[in-house]
Amino acid sequence: MNSDPNAALHDQLAAAAALQHAGQQPTWPDASALGSAVAELAAYPPLVFAGECDVLRTRMAAAARGEAFVLMGGDCAETFESATANNIRERIKTILQMAAVLTYGASVPVVKVGRMAGQYAKPRSADTETRDGLTLPAYRGDMVNDFAFDAAARVPDPHRLVSAYHRSSATLNLVRAFTMGGFADLRHVHDWNKGFVASAANARYERLAHDIDKAMKFMAACGADFDAMRTTEFFSAHEALLLDYERPLTRIDSRTGNPYVTSAHFVWVGERTRELDGAHVDFLARVRNPIGVKVSAKAEPDDVVRLVERLDPSREPGRLAVITRMGAGRVADALPPIVERVRDAGASVTWICDPMHGNTFESSGGYKTRDFDDIVAEVRGFFDVHRALGTVPGGLHVELTGNDVTECVGGTHKVLDADLATRYETVCDPRLNHRQSLELAFLAAEMLAADVTA
Ligand code: PEP
Ligand code: CO
Image 1 (cartoon, rainbow, N blue to C red):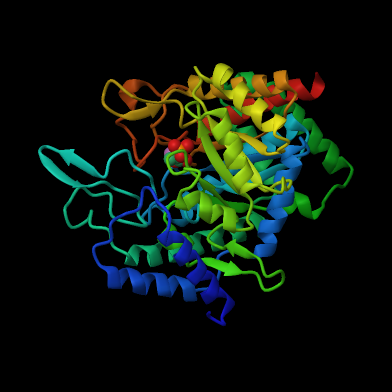
Image 2 (tube, protein in one colour):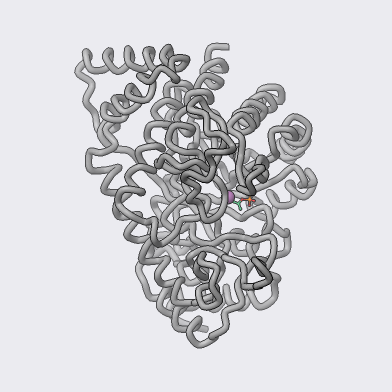
């Protein structure tokens, strides 16, 4: 038995790991390099503090009761190269703009969570990729290998685990500076949103923007100038996919003696790795963070209940979010039985809609894309299902960027099939661009406002 509590915890996690199947892990060719990388991570400071994770748990609990609304957003896959000040700033700006609109629509606080500062590992449908007769290991995210289709670049390199930690640390540092240092001032955010609706194409959102403007002027006239207008809480999240990264970043909280994964405030297990007796679910069951599980239309309602039993046996408010990604065409039939079974099992999970992952298709030009209208339709379907069942729609989980990319088709500033080639920059799934993200926020805010006044 190791007397250092963290070393003892890591021994325990390693022992458990030896007994379980872990899907979607790379085959590291160099075991000793992996050992050094893991040891290095285990010695680094945590990226987040356990107390912050506890705060997020209370925020998630509020969202489960309808007293807050969660907005999670960011890249499908962050890359080392794209972790620049400009990109991070534009993404934060987009999330803050969306959150301001949603706050008004829902009349409750919006809990802002970035799918960032650690979203560097991806599950893949195949272990290899073949192009023009050449077969190489699949790209598994910058934490594992390089996107370039080149034999050397695709070799999994454990040193990338350490690089991912440093990029995440730098990203989170800037996020904290932006959200606490004045950039997030609600008055600036509101001015940015006025710029968005000023364009003729967005005239249909003017009414909502006008109402928000009146509320802002009312607050200003009252002399309202409080901290919550100048700064905002902001949390980090990613899929806890690569266990060689997550396990060494797990720590015992010295205040409570409980284990937390300190790579992010919130982590989730993906649709492809949520096996009930697999390593990912076991890992999440052992940490105290607020956590999520992604669920598609293929999930059996009973399996979802089993996951809830395993991940939230004590039915702790805010502990577990179920992130549903049914597809626009399936949400109306596939979501209700899942929500009903979970509700009837006495669980009060936070229901979050991911309108992205059930709506991906290949464009005629061969790009992986999503149609803005399908994304909106799934969000609408999600709200409809929860309204019909009397359960609470707790939030949205969106793949987005603050940049003007052309990856998803549609939106008022219509991105056409033929435009996809112009700025298709994602290394994994297609993201909403800045305008499409704001438009989604306005539409979702209208849906939420209809519920508030109903
Ligand atoms: C993702 O969020 O990028 C992802 C892979 O999602 P899912 O697990 O829902 O397929
Ligand atoms: Co994705």
